[in-house]
Image (cartoon, rainbow, N blue to C red; front, top):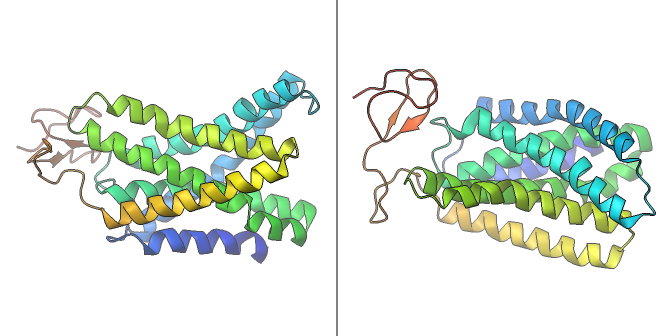
Length: 255
């Protein structure tokens, strides 16, 4: 069991310690648990999709469709929607690096239960292998998702329509990368997989260092038309730059 959980904890700590302004443990644990629990319905959906598509691993086209929809899309959408519904529109999601932290915690919550189940079923050897492959892989998918959600938030609060593009990319890119990650493994293109994996890990480390170094509040005033004032809904915590009523829950906003 330790071999299943330890790599998750180490990667969580690595991402957490780089946060210039630490998030509360309670909130991070909540996001982690959401990711952990989501593994169960996601696993059921994957089984159902595999039965529907009549998976034949020797048919590379069918295999790609299965990996893209039946694994990558289902898993990454579950993580993405958890972030969107639980923390994205709250006062807790107020700095660039927050996006990286929350997406990593939900991804590693998912990876944790998945890892435990694999180790119980297949033994310590599988745990050791997944500690240097699958667990860091899920971390990278979360980092990339967080990176583009950071841009989404940045442009959204400035009423810049390009936020829609980044919003799509925050889901699409993790799905595509996850698809290629699994597809290269399933088709036993190990050389391509190793090269791709190394590039992915290096790229994600650069993302973490970049965002942590440039970290600042989304609402900070600069020449880039950032709102000079920001109020939060007293009911749901949704940030707003306008008076009147909350766009999410309709509660009266403070003046």
